[in-house]
Length: 313
Length: 325
Image: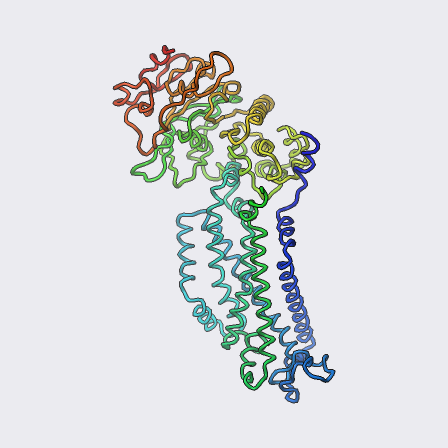
C-alpha cells in the first residue's frame, strides 16, 4: 500500500458524533436554533439559581411579592420615562414583574421537559429493545402494553393520574412521562428488529456475546440517534402539555408556570393589558420552534440513511 | 486422528412444523484437527445453515433442529445450555462472514472490537499488545492505525482481515469461513485465501470453508463436500473430487469453472435452478436438472454409497457418470 492511500484512509478517526456535529454546524438555521435553545437553558439555570437562593434565605422572591401599587405597568421600554431597569416587560395584575416570572416559567418548563424525559426515555428504550430483540411472547406483551397506553386519550390519562397523585408537578411528571414513552418504544422496537438481522449482530452472536450485551452495547449505540432526536422533539411537546395542564389549573400550583401566566393574563386582555400574554406566548413559540427545527436538523445530521447518499456521492 | 467436529445426520427445518422447509436434511461429515474442509454448493443448498448449526446459531424460531447431533470435542452442541454455548462461540468455534463491511459494528473502532472479543473469553492478557499482534498477524501493514480506524475507513480486504483478527482473538480450534471472499474482488480473494492457509499453518486450527466456487477449493481444502438441496451429494479428498467427480452435479459445477490449461471449451452451466426446499422433487433431488436422469432417479431416492476409498456419492448412476467423457 502506498503512503498516499494510507494518509487519507484509516485511523484519522473522526467519530460519528464529530461527523454529525460537522454536518449540524454547516447549517446556519440549526446553529441559530441551537443558540436559542442554549439561551433558554441559561435562563432556566439562572431561574433555578434565584429560586434556590430565596429558598435558602427563606425569603419571598420578588416574582411572588404582591405590590398593588404597581398593578399593570406597561413594559418600561414603551414608556417615555427612563425606567428600563424597573420592569422591562411590565407587571401583572398583582404588580409582579413579568420578566422575572417568565424566567421562572422557563425553569418550570425545563424541569417538566427533563423529568418527563427521564421517565419516558428509559422505559421506551428498554422496552423497545427487549421487544425488538427477543420477539415472541415478550414482544406480544410489550406491543399490547404500548397499544393500550396509546389507545387511552392522552389528556384523560394525564387527568386521571393528576387525580390520583393530586394536583401539582408530580402529577404532571407522571402523566406526561408515562404517556410519552409509547412513540419512542415503537420506533426503537422497529429499529432493533431491523438491526438484529444485520451481519454485525450475527457476528456478535457468533463471538459468544450475551443477549443483553448485544442489545445494549452493540445495537443501542447504532440507533441512539433516534433517542436524541426523539428527545429534542418530545421536549417542547411536553412543555406544551404542561402549559396546557397548568392553564386548566391541574398542573403547577403556586409557582409562575407559563400556563398559569396565560391563564391570569387573559382576565384583563380585553382591557388592553396585552404584554403578559404576548411575551409568554412569544416565549413558548420561540422554544417550541427552536427545539423542533433543531430536532429535524439533528435527524438530518445523524441518520445514517440520509448520510450515506452524500458520503458516496 | 480424532475428529474435532463430527456432524451426524443433522436436520434443520424452517417454518411450519406440519410442512417444514427442509433446509438441511440428514447431513453427516467430520472435521479433523488442523484440517481444511470445504462445503460447496449453489445458493440455497443449505451450506450456510449447516455451518451456522455448528455453534447452534440458526435462530429459533423460525429454525428447528429436527434431528441429528453436532459433536464438538465429543460434546453435543445441539443439547448444550445457553451458557455453555456462549463459552464455546468465539472461543472454540469462530466465524467470518461474507460481507465484512456489514459484519463489523459501524460505531466502534477496530481495535476496540477485537479487544472486546478477546476480553470475553480470556483474562490477564495485555489487550492492547495482543490486539496489535493479531492485526499484524492478519497482515495489516500499520496495526496501530488499523486499530484506531472505524470499519468504514477500511477497504473490503482490510475489513475482512480485521474480521479474521476478531475471529482469531481467542485462538479457536475451528474457524468457519462462510463465503469469506464472495464480496471481495478477485485479487483480494486470493490474498485472503492465502492468509487463511498461512494462519492455519501457524495456529493449527481447523477451517470449514464454505463457498459456491469449486475452483476456489483446489489449493486450499483437504477434503470437499458437495451439497445439493440440503443433502450431501458427494464427499471426498479434494484431489479425487476435482479430478474424478462422480456426481453429475459436481460435474456440472466443475464445467462452470474456467480453466487455465487444456482446450478452451465453452463454459456450461447447469440447467434450471435449485428446487424450492418446501417442494422437493421425488426420488433424487437433482433429477429434474440431471442430464443422466432415468426412471429410477424419479422414483427412488438414492443412498450415499462408497464409490472409492474415502469417496462417497449419492447417485444411482454414478458409474456411468464416471465413465462419461
